[in-house]
Amino acid sequence: MEVESLARTFAALADPTRVAIVARLARGDATVKELTEPFDLTQQAVSRHLKVLADAGLVSRRQQAQARPASLEVDRLVEVLAWIGARRAEWADRHDRLAKYLGES
Image (cartoon, rainbow, N blue to C red; front, top):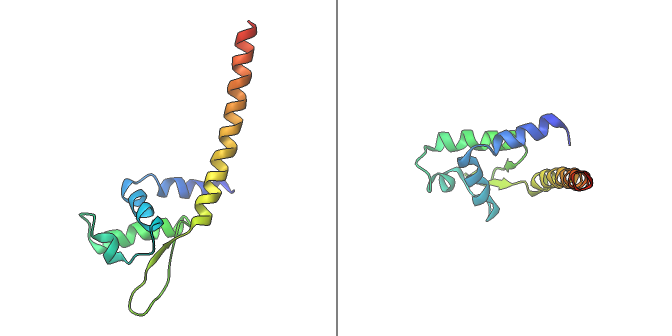
């Protein structure tokens, strides 16, 4: 996974409102109006959050009659989780080696 793309994804998920939007979209597609309901935000503010999530590859939007529902891009989350899993394995290995080294001292 390229570093810039990963950085955009983590930056997008650094905002609690965007995390909440991702969590809501995990339950199913939603329009901006539907996404606005649980927040004290305008539709314009939610649209800006969706743009950040879309730029990070986490959300897509499509035209459906008069609405433009947003959808979660699960494949992108899977890529991020795979990257995190690989780092976790590296860190665990380093921790194990350090523990072994300290145990030998």
